[in-house]
Image (cartoon, rainbow, N blue to C red; front, side):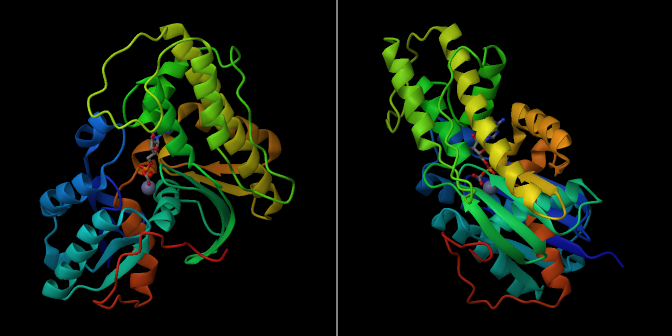
Length: 353
Ligand code: KG4
Ligand code: ZN
């Protein structure tokens, strides 16, 4: 008989719930975005995020059950994100999941958000199996893993400063393009020429798979300031940014050059890691994996280098609860149960380092 997992995800600024059948078939996936709430600030305001989660978590879970045409009595297990993320946000989903599990006597497991991102690829590609190399590139993480089996991960490399998505968001904020920055920069980059401005690429020494994006971000700021244009300033907290004059051609070319540099680095390092593993399978996940230029450059280069790439649909790359349900399913099936003292961990690590 089919096993139904209810996934709950509130690690950052999306309130999400999903019902997934046997970790492969999505019966429903509901995501309530808080983008409009945080947009005036150019980034997520943690306190506002947790308050909004409190308001939306139950309506979102109810909507996921309705769309899946099931009641709580038919749910076989609950998988909830336990970390990493914003502590206040995490606590809302976790407490809600624990309360639901206790009140209705439903088995519960806590899931690592990063493992969830990797499992999104499983939901999208039926044929994908362990082992594989997995890159999670999101707003909070740029982490490269060797995934050997469910629950078994080894960290191969990570960003030493900004995450890739964070770099997109900060550069977009500096240019006054709005939040979240990734999709805005991608849109502007389509109108620009990536060869007009060549920004520096940070490539680690041979034995390392670490990333670094803060130098690139500074290079963009210095370049734009050097042209004499006034920009908003990274780290500014102006709640209501005013429009200001920036030459659209300059913005388009800077966006194209910046995006090309990020894509170059992500493609080079993740392919280098994937080529050292026997499976030669590479999973690309996390919000930055929505980026069309990254997807096409990686697909092309991977074909040339004999690596098979698995990338979820964009709706599964950004935060969602279907990926949390999929990651929790094998553990629920094995009989794992979270104790009700389970706590959220803002810095929860995935696997061995
Ligand atoms: O995985 P996600 O939804 O949340 C985190 O766990 O952080 O990722 C959000 C990040 C943001 O930094 C956003 O700017 C970035 O993913 N992102 C993109 C694109 N869409 C979202 N970055 C580049 N290109 C995109 N199209
Ligand atoms: Zn995420």
